[in-house]
Image (tube, rainbow, N blue to C red):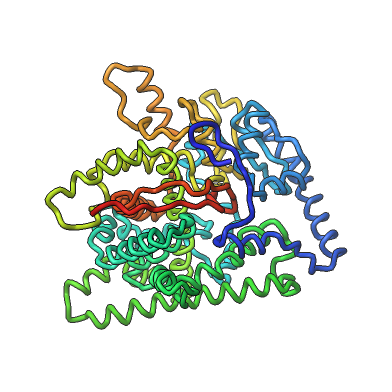
Length: 547
């Protein structure tokens, strides 16, 4: 059950509208393969991997191992309760570093210790080769997300990194007329729901909003039309019209389940064998459609930039955008590579920010005193001004604390980062035990935060982020622990390239929503996990405030 004032537990429920297609994909047994072939291939793979891992695992013999067979561990790691299972293992083993029984040639190590996690991420590790299975989502084309070789990754990342500079991103968000128009659409939709007496699913609505905002800000002003179609449907009380954003959200779940879950853990679904599966073939067709959407974004950008060629200011704005840097980057060989990264920005950017906003709204609804204080603070900078949306809520320290606490309590990338070590990494200064070179290390962010040595780690307390009073040694120590454990966008060369954009958009949206509405719980959500942890089957009511 979702609770903020006490320890949080998981209550699973039937999927919401946002999760229906994903749930259907997950529930499929994949029994379309010949059973004998499947058993033989998987059995041989496990036996070979077990033999090699037994030899190589001796290097990590000083670490405890979570109990359970290969099959049981795989089931736990791919279940909806995986983040909570990880916490249970750490508590049961009384160790924040432990091995898992997985059919891999190298040790698979879970790292929940803050200091060791930071060492791993800053030791210039690479991404596991298994991540390349996600290339199927981009029809076999590598993206920044799946480039495992460091030099190759840096070659593509470096030319577009300047576009994500914090000041440039903030200017793009707060100075975007399209972004302001998008918030007007969200405002109109919530007011329509209020008039109709209808509650709404914040996870679904925030993800739809973020798809549109990514188009407005990161993708050079591309109009996905998701909220516009939804607003038109609300006004006519009919089905939503077609929108590019709506199609993206509709076909994405099948692609993610196939290439982020099934292919990595099931070798018989890879290569030509995938064509034996109707579900796999359908996922590949949908992945091809997603790449067509990405190409549409590129083509639209080029047409609009060419039309603004004589307007120096507009032309410069196009070139300075994130998509402008991507289009002009000499690192890309062709548009297929550009489309792969456009698609990855869309996939990685919409639900992580959308679910963070949903969790924040739920927490504010459950803590009306915090919501009221935040509203008062957000309204102060607007005295004497006519604008309805603020400049990212920068003038509200409480807003920043609320967002940080939401990300701490509910890090949507709950199972965090996975890295392959290129060097031995000692777990302490004694060098007695080292994480061996070649080991796969996973740093689960939810477990890292919930097991951190801070006061009431399972409770929503935004004021824990206040600066400690001068001379209060205990508060200073806890503050340091809090900040050391907080890296929701990961660390090192492989950290999230879009974190400045995500922070700017979350501040912009949450400030606007809390200023214009009071949110109340209609139905408490359950929790689900697949790639991200997110609230499902919950409802909020938005009560408009007087303008």
